[in-house]
Image (cartoon, rainbow over all chains, first blue to last red; front, side, top):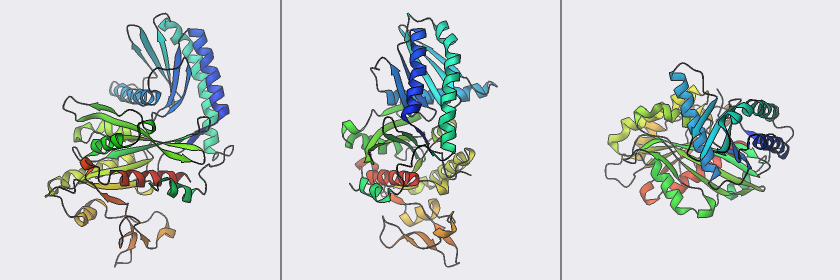
Length: 163
Length: 225
């Protein structure tokens, strides 16, 4: 049994690759913004037009939404729902699972047809999965490309909580 | 699962407040929300029923300072305590880095505490996590109530200790939070037992809330070091 959940890390290169892929997707669909979170609800990054809401909270609620829908899927005999669509009067969001590790949330207004978002989503998810595979395999190798930033930081951690 | 974002220079960790219904989990988060500087915390989100019982979870992100140039961001969650919300509780535990068990000290709630503790062990085991080897602290809340059980009774019931996971830990380790007590100790039978840190609290007045948060956050970061 594991002591707990594993750690993973994103470096500049990972985020540049993710941003590039998602920026292209936004350009192709006309969607204005996207947000990427992990399945635990931690925000990875936002792409496109600046968001006028708290992205941390949004990431958490999206992950919870996805998790709850996963359970609903199982109740009806599916393993999961890989995408969710929430339609509003002016703004809508399309949420897609990426390798059961990340969630891509695409935000768009009523000038963007949902069909186009759906159509372009599949290759984007595949590309993001490839980026993610690199992150995961690096984490499995013990993060060889990034030193453990907290190694030997016991005293500094004590100091951090000295309040 | 803690996530280190090198580009944003952030360490993100998830802490879950667990425990029986009406034990004070949400009150812990509300106190933290009210006391930390607004620029170091996000919104407190509550997915609650109309009667303010937690339906899915409460969520509060807080920054607890910078270490080696990285901002330490803790995502605090509560779970719904009521027995029949187990599906929601289990979802919230996914990828957790640290646990706070908020016990209700009232004698009448002992059964509910035990049931919730067992449920925590079971849910963690279903994810393949070993609760005895991860950052975990207990808060005995509502210490101000006249019907509060003695701490030693609560400790015996909820924090009896387990065999240290690592044989090298089989040596006396004093409890840094309680003079004269030990976190790792040897029983008269010769067995070694390890307890988790505990705190007495009156969450509604804020007593013990930050001690609990500091202790679990520190354990989470030390697990990464």
